[in-house]
Image (cartoon, rainbow, N blue to C red; front, side, top):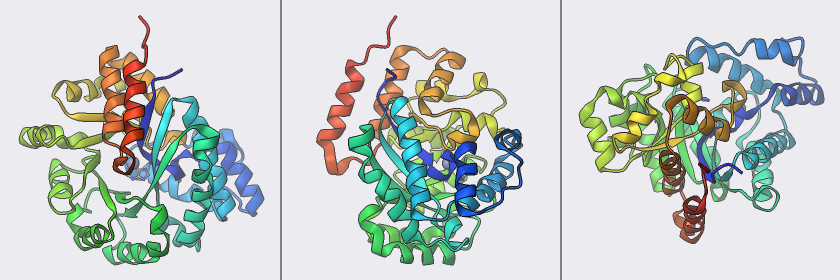
Length: 331
Ligand code: ES4
Ligand code: ZN
């Protein structure tokens, strides 16, 4: 059994496997511009973030009903459980669905139906985080937050994703202020393709508690020092970084150096259907590529629970941390 872990950076739409995409296309009478699952997999060669996002948004066309979102989340949770996931904080992109005529209520109720059964079926506790698309206007994000108000009992926090460069965090200052007023937790993608300055801005202007990716913080030593001192978690996604060409090969990923620098690094899968592995696969891949020690792997697993939004259930966090402490990595 893999080490128990929390997954903190996972786009549910990025768990749409080709087989399910074709099944949902058939169920909904949607035609995909690919002959079959093999032809679709052939398209999974990305040159950067945008080339991936183009396919990611296009394939969402098959997600139409609440049942589609339930099936999507249930398939993810089943795979996550096999990979040692005990707690999952799941991103979704309401604006991308609303643009296709699927209201946020359908998405949240659909995902929620799967999440309600996750503990009993898969042994996984869950949270939902709604992300704003940073390449859309801030007004659209604000309208989405407004539309989410009837569903806030199911939503733990807000995030910021999609095309980063040219869309600095400060663009969403008011949206995050309103999210804070509503009692929502705040995270944001920053320093994936964008500069270290975006990481600073996410902290200072948006008040985020975790940075999603944060890879490019390494270009600013004083920022690294601050992230270490303030224990700001980074939700790294090493397989994503290789597939989207932020890092040439996994052997050159800075994860190990980041751990050694004292950063609160976590390892996550981002969009596992597209990037070649779920989070347990990702742990195995970085262990092999970077020769991580069992104690470094244990630190990654511990960090995932320490960085989780489990403040409303500290007893559970303690149980998970005890499972990590007791885990035997073997020789
Ligand atoms: C994403 Cl890897 C990544 N980066 C930014 N936005 C995203 N949405 C889905 N995956
Ligand atoms: Zn992401």
